[in-house]
Amino acid sequence: MNETIKQSPGKKKVLFLITKSNWGGAQRYVYDLATALPETDYEVSVAVGGNGELAQKLTASNINTISIPGLQRDISVRKELQATLAIAKIIRAEKPDVLHINSSKAGALGTLLGRILRVPNIVFTSHGWAFNEDRPCWQKILLKFIHYCTVLWSHKTIVVSHKLKQEMNWLGVQKKMYVVHPGRTIPTLKPKAEARGIIETKVTTSEANLSDFHTDFWIGTIAELHPIKRLHRAIDAIAAVSRNYPKIRYVIIGDGQLRTVLEQQVRDLGLTNHVFFTGNIHEAGRLLQAFDIFLLTSKSEAFGYVLLEAGLASLPCVATEVGGIPDIILHEKTGMLIPPEQTTAITESLTKLIENPNLRTTYARAHAQRAQEFSIEKMTRETMTLY
Figure 1 (cartoon, rainbow, N blue to C red):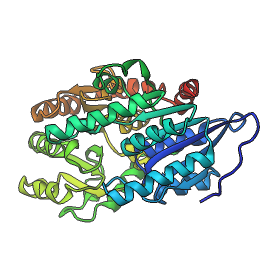
Figure 2 (tube, rainbow, N blue to C red; figure 1 turned 135 degrees about the vertical axis):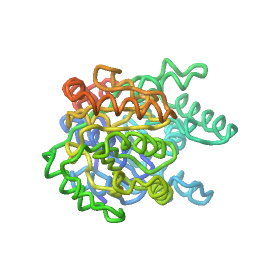
Figure 3 (tube, rainbow, N blue to C red; figure 1 turned 180 degrees about the vertical axis):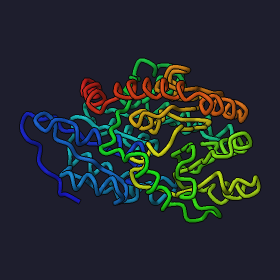
């Protein structure tokens, strides 16, 4: 990690704070902003839990990166106290003009400490509300109260979609929230044949060889194998579609707690020639042109970064009409939106696109054009106005 550096005269000091240093959507957001802010006007530091890929990328980009001892997603009283003291120490040492906090746990701790230590401008970015996850009712109410306090304690809160703003509907916070859509770039998209070749080498547990189906019709998903993604419904839909279109192949890029369960579902449905798991692939967005259709069946999605990547890859999409997805996908203009939890709707939408190549092309072109509107430059410019 870099040592703390002194602020240059005339520059505004920005300190980012985030819980985890893995490479997820929130981490990419912090990296993109930290590296995009103009060096002539801003001096940037990032305080982060752990030494994962985010921390490594920031250090490689010469961003002052500070490790936060004890900061983790799981609850631990000892670790919470350790992290609280560490964050307070970092804020005192850095003396930021702007404290920009990301993720739920860092949000609750950071906004409170920022107020106590009198940081001039506390900005919190919500990448999703934890009360939207599958939890008991009492947990949802408690989590919404914690999020509510986080927004209250911030001076300004950025939400990544209009739906997130609507969902935090308790008294006195709507006027503090601003919608700023994240941007996305894919430096190098692999052409179709090459992308398929790379993906084929990543499938190691299937009873069938994906390379035997290199020229077939591929549907793809990039997602964590988590209950909220409702991948079991996507697999059920593929079972129905494949009865009429036996050359359909469904590739799921990602890993997670449900992998064993989903693989068993595939075997039980006799889909080992149709559904393939690759596990995690670094920068999987560069391989999106391997697919003919992109599918996202989430029950909840704060924004849907991967749909932007699908747009940059000129893919037609079928996605659930939840969270921030309608901010990206315009129904029957840039793709097809379907109700969540409805396997039949997934089946019908996929079938319509499979049967209509001209419609796929129309959606793909419109989606590619719309994806260009969600740029890192625009995100950075709109965020700077809140600083």
